[in-house]
Length: 449
Image (cartoon, rainbow, N blue to C red; front, top):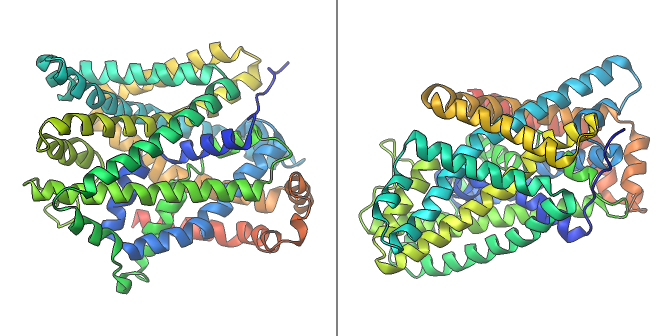
């Protein structure tokens, strides 16, 4: 007998949890540097357009399947058809999605552990523990293992508490904190010398670049991946939604919040990079591109904080609290994917299942840490570059081709009785069947090229 399922107690709880899943580390550092490298405001414009033309329809596919099936990703996808072959295909896609979500969390926990280390470092300096502060920012096996274990333990603790008392409770606390810290840091950075130049790069459009194929593909990929689509996180969150909620409206709210926070992060990161340049820090690679990813977070910005004197310690503390929150709200959604499967398939108590699965994923993280040069980039590419797009295509196919039109309509009418007469219903079903998979495949092929 399967364990009883949880449910979000409010619309706000779901929106904060789903937005938290979408707003992760890649959103904070990835979107701003993609924008600066792809025509500034032209990229922002295309990103917002494609967020609704591509990411929103795919998000709706996951939410609709999840709430219809009221189950984990494996059971949900295998329940959409009575045909044996399609049921097996659904189970196979579901299990692969669970594996990909788990692998993403295994390397994500390592990077999030680094965030924890850089979060503690300013406090260590304030207390005069200089040797400990140096250990926190030096790349070592002991530092990586301990901080990864701490982050994994925190994620396990939240997921073990359940949907309402774990995911919803902490998402509704962490997301407002993240937004508040982001806005405070923006105000501070924009008052620094050099910020104006960064703001111009970010906001003034180069409209000649707006229709370049590379810019469109990059904006499409950013819109899709920023919403945590493809590995079943939104499907599982959708399965915890009340039947009284309107799925199109909730999906639109999550898309708007995610895109808005990504844009707002750019108002912090790009000006901060140019402030760092004003203080003598190199912010461009040898190829002329802005430094992105870990190099931005762990080299450029810490160098900026050091130039700020006493205030730099507190700015660094606030920034890495922001980054740690972004990491945590995403990690809890990824751990929920395998945990929901284990709890519903075996009937095991949630806390026990969460602990066992969390420890297994930490074991994979440990393996990556000990073989970092060989495994880290391989796992990142396998999951985010190759697996997520193909899984996204499959989820669109399941919603558009395998789940019957009548089932789709019946599910969407729950919480939105007049859906059949709306523009959404006239456009979305054929869109998710044909155009959405083609767009995702185009982004996938371009990424390979």
